[in-house]
Image 1 (cartoon, rainbow over the protein chains, first blue to last red):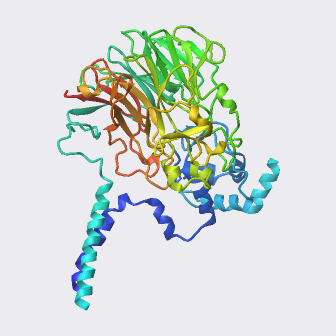
Image 2 (image 1 turned 30 degrees about the vertical axis):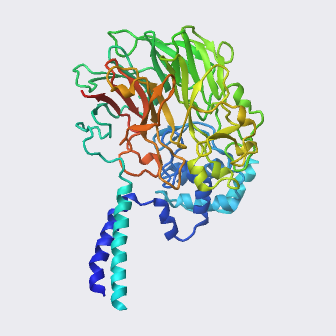
Image 3 (image 1 turned 45 degrees about the vertical axis):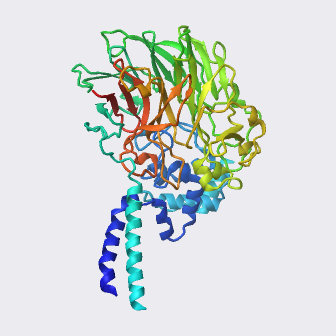
Length: 141
Length: 432
């Protein structure tokens, strides 16, 4: 029984790998354990900043491998709560599209989201706590 | 029993292989076809008999493009490159490839048009013009201000330009919003009613083409309204009318999941092709076009649910509707003498490619041809030039190798195309 199937399976696997370039990256999501920060990203951020954090050239800046994400936490939390309405430079490119405020996200959602962002997409920085988000929100009020 | 199971499993494996084989090739529909003209190295996929050369590369983030009577090429840049916002190209050896490249001008933006011996430049808040001289590639001297006082917009700021033959200039002033929500791009937020943005944006403004220092809200005149953002604008000299292609709204599903499925958000609304006459109202932000239902529908910010028409019945319909989000960024009508007869007076539209179709692949990244007769489409649209994105599937727009942005026809009838991704320019010719 196995004798007849093994060559076929090998062929099958080869073809599966040859298809890899056409793979839908969002399908990978189901293989990872659920991350609340990732879920917030997918619902509120992904359409502009894209599945891979690369943004939209000339319109929406990347969130991957950038000091805007891995750097100053207060600045980062402020961008999420208040949005952005000025020209900024990210990874050498100028962006001046307005980013909407996401004040309606809870402090927990923002902490989860930013912790996820800071440890993904080529960013390697520590987590953002709920207390930090609450503190910045109070300052902004 | 075991044998049956064995045969069955083997059979299923074979079916599996066939399915995978087909799923592999389904993404390759843009591959080179048998007999297609690709005697060039441009990588573009073109109809039989056409070929392309790369005129220049790595120029910066290119926007609109114009070609002068002496074949000099001018391109607007999105951002300053080494302090300059315009680039000029000259081919001195007649091989199609630019061998002189000069940057000039402090203005940067999108709109660019050669008219009456001037290079008109639509920067985001001002329209200026440079006097062109045959012996000079980069124009000398300061430009004149033709129109100014445009709002400083953080969305849809492109000032694309068109000119009629009666001394007028038409400028796209995009609405700086998705759908004029009370709270910008916020789930469930209602729309402002009336939308105050319509007073100073979301329309086409008309100016004199040779009067300096016209202010948008004083000497300028709102020619048409209800247009969200029309980066593609062109005057059709055959019928003497203005045409535009609109970027439709985004994120129906993200903001109103109670009325729209994820697929609705991906596939709606249409990118609309409009014939624009004085006083027209095309309905933004109150309405959008559904090319499955073939009608304008009320936007969810204004009480719409994907079915209600409401006040949209009185808004002007498109002459053609394209798939959602593919970003029409330039329009020309082909009046050159070089391309085959079917292209004569037809429309060519550059679709920059979408960003708003997650989690499905992004679409667009091609140039479309629409046949025209008597000022209206006379047949379906078709892809004219493809292969810009450089791969079968693009999941986010940054993955595209090139994105077609600007279109212009040279004096010999060749089509020039600019790219915003790497700053490449192609010259597409027929039987040359």
